[in-house]
Length: 359
Image (cartoon, rainbow, N blue to C red; front, side, top):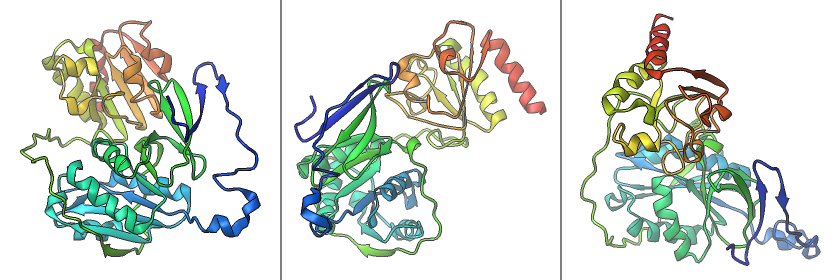
């Protein structure tokens, strides 16, 4: 159930039906016109965009939070923490529209562990008096922001795709089959944004000041042990302009690699996979596209041997052009595909790969 602090309108995506709850005409965006502009100005809007970094390099995908903050209006500050982040802060300072970069240079925050990162962020939110705090709906954001929201006694607004006003946000629910318009009356809005809905802000034209943030030096109850990252020379799946994804129809890991990797190289594309392919061991879980994997929106998405379950569609249906190859003409993927080819993928994909190489 939604809290009493929120009014929600749900629109059925397929039927287009709506359930609207009337609101008082005397209140607009949280302000009463009878109080006049002076009262409204007492609550100035300001946003803090939380940026991600790794090993002293800025995650450019996290700059989507700044793009979303620009749609709110008001001054925008950005926050970054970790070890040796001077170069990260200086690069972020070049983003147009950002007034200040708040940086905390402490290796204790390098891995973004929410146990000590959340208290750090909360202290800086309180010091800055921000009304909106935004981060990408990534593993980092999804791990951190629930703790931040709890510490600030606010209800998190997750995975938004549009901003209607400073209080009202749009987000998909039920695997994208319905759209919720959520209005929040919390003093501080804690928001995660869908990166595919907001383009990353360009690192150009800005000259923000870099300021040291407050560091409460909270000890983490969690110890970072190690990580095992899948390395690839191909484009990053989350930000690639072209993605080729394989599904259960590829039958084995050997066939997945034999069919999909040459195709990806011929197109200069990133490689993805359906949950069924990942669960079957055909591909690493870092390649999973879908509701419980990565959400992508490339210029071209080519689905090979993927039936098109709703869980998978939730992660790629915003792609600009969707192409599908499947031997089942009734596969659900063809209902969303712009271009479809019915045939045996073990014949059609190698043929397509050869034609792309020769072209």
